[in-house]
Image (cartoon, rainbow, N blue to C red; front, side):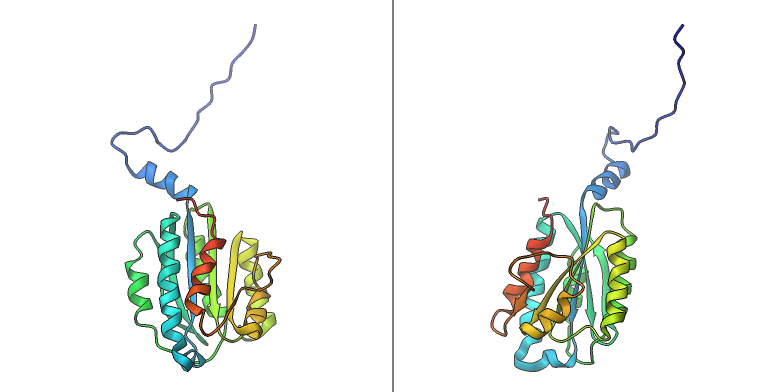
Length: 205
């Protein structure tokens, strides 16, 4: 005589009506979150590059949100100048972005650490850090070690540098693999190049 085993199965209550917290939790897990890290070091004041970068970041945020991503922002130099965690409400990130002022040096470890913590606090299917800079990441070994911690937690890293030198420096921590080489901005294409990083998101729409 065949026997049977009584089992208990648990799952999110996706059939509840009206739609409640269980649905939002499930939908979130299939979405994505991105932290946009903008270099606001002192060199960004040259040729009004900070203004161009801010314009590009606004476009990136719009495309990321259109793709269903929660969006956060970090303004970085040798430390963190300001940060907001990823959210479906992009207004806080946009307000911080509009207050961006250039000053300071370059060090990647603080913003990578903050982005790591913010992204791991979310239950999402795709976690991404998108970085723009016009210099380097500080000590390379330190930046690479910290970036490896993010990659170990399945966080993807997209980079864009101003000029060939910066693009190559930032690309050492990028997880993108493209035949075109490092994503490189020129002084007259900063906004377009930053916005183009949104193509590296797995847009869900």
